[in-house]
Amino acid sequence: MAGMGMGCIAWGDSGVKPQLPVDEVGSAHYIKVFGGESLLLLGTQDRRTMMGVEYGYGKPDKRLAFRGYPAQLVCELKFDYSRASGNFPEDPSSDFALGAIFYAHYEFPWKSSTGYFVDWGGGAESINHTSRDLPLSFDGAIMVGAGYFMPLQSSTNRLLIGFRYFHISNGGRKYPNYGQNQIQATIGVRF
Image (cartoon, rainbow, N blue to C red; front, side, top):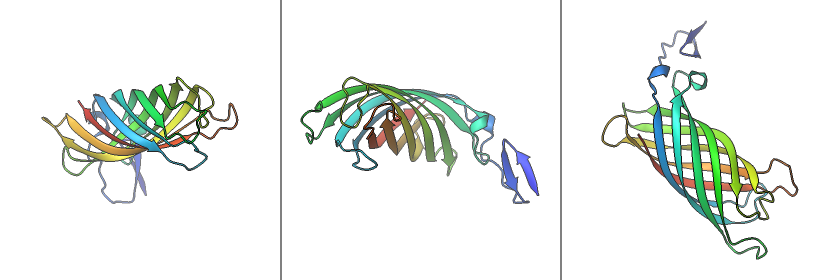
């Protein structure tokens, strides 16, 4: 027997209830800094280190709820600087990128204001120099991330510490399309 509740399906009489109603996730602003490195896998050839800043705004979105856990749809603008390892002297040693990422943000609390989060989504990025991995200056991006959150001064202000995987490529618009595969550490504030 299946019952419908809060935009998700609960099987049987398990009595599973969402921890937070979908409407109570609220809107929030996000400010983050990140740093990371590209991984030489799935085609990536140019090892780069990067750092950057992001600003995002999230709103509740009932369509993204997962098993009773509410979600926000977050729009994030990012600016990053990356530096190459020097493996390919013909590529620029450094570049700047500006991007926009749209993602679903889920929080799974252990207590009322402490727990872990999961993010997934995609967007686009523009770089000021092309390279071996990114032969076009405008590329698409996908992102998956997870981490831990804890309260700051109130239950709505939170510190978020996490890791994420970024894949950036031109989607086959120009070959070779190696793409960049990046692992990033993030620290930010939700307010």
